[in-house]
Image (cartoon, rainbow, N blue to C red):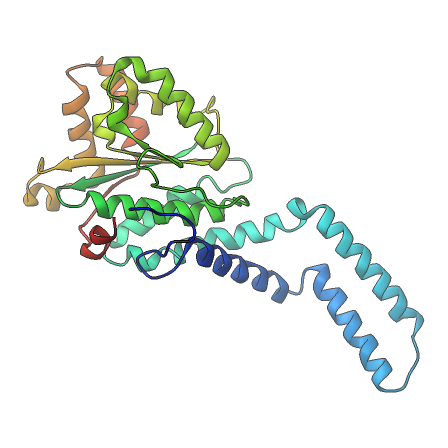
Length: 304
């Protein structure tokens, strides 16, 4: 499926609609807070118009107010990243996942909590490390997982202040900031994929790796370096991993175990025979902390 910012999502909304709706909400809230100089300028001009309407002249305090408000407006635009970002960022942190709810609705309640806590962890002024979200897809849920990841990526990009047009997310399957794990199934692909992901994280603050289970076991350790606690190349970023677990776990196992435990078991099985125990433990430490088990959504599967 071709997907770009002009194509509608499953709820009929395009990427541009999504961005416009979010920015309208943020700007309206900022204006209504009566903290911005634009409100001061608006109120000052309103007072001036009222004076003219009543037949009065220009009062000195009105002229002074207009000049002062205009100067504040100029400073606001010059220092927009400093003056507006803090207020707008706070608002974005609390609102971005609201845009995600129409897609999230068929998933479990803890899904939204895990996702929102993880994404908000990189929205601080100084992020410690990238957020790694592991989306495990049982058989028949791959399309759902990818669509959820794509919508999450859109909302998170806007919340992180992405000003450039949204990149194509799955056109082609290994384009935009979507990386197909099956294309990196050799140990020789390590540095190729590492460079690709670093570029994506620095450019978009986002990388989506599908078919994570198809990566060569040695290549999976890239996540340890990208999400390192002290030396990450892009701390304020999000790494989305889609892991196809097929029919590995029975319904009873899925119902009785948490997502992080299931992820731990699965990664042990696919990495353990090929990597040292310490390396496997390090990969799991970075990957399983925010694991999510995706439930099938027929509507999303059909749009994938």
